[in-house]
Image (cartoon, rainbow, N blue to C red; front, side, top):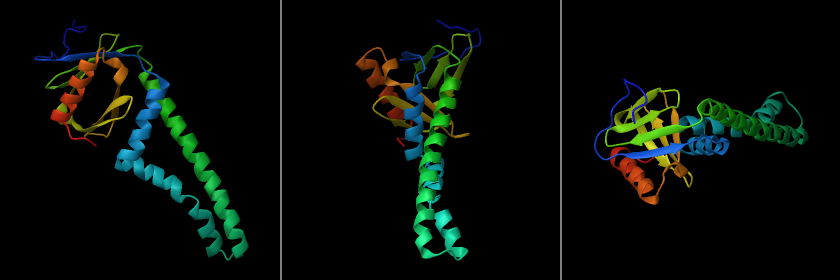
Length: 178
């Protein structure tokens, strides 16, 4: 059933998936993004290098070597706490964006993914617009070429294991695994 008059039409063998957003989906998607993409790794590296800054500043200013360790521990505490808060806040913002709609209906086909929302709008993501895909225990993830946006589909959205295998097959056939 088409919810909008101008919605993209999907042809051929297709797979329907329905899901409602959950907060843990956003956390899992961001965790994958931080590990598998260059921008995500750079952001994580920034937080991990942070403990070196106070110690280097102390050395440059002529602070006694006994205080270097204290400065490094302070930097480590700030880095770990900052990384956790940054990650948690970003995941919550992603969840808030996704939770604006109570249900997503995604149709996977050989041409791409069509997402229809309850408010009647729809969008199409052709495979050619995706940089690649990833898979975790709970999610399928798509990374777009244009702006590096991260789209996710929970595996619980597939109604049967056969549909889940078909979605995986469409991803593998049309995209490279990240």
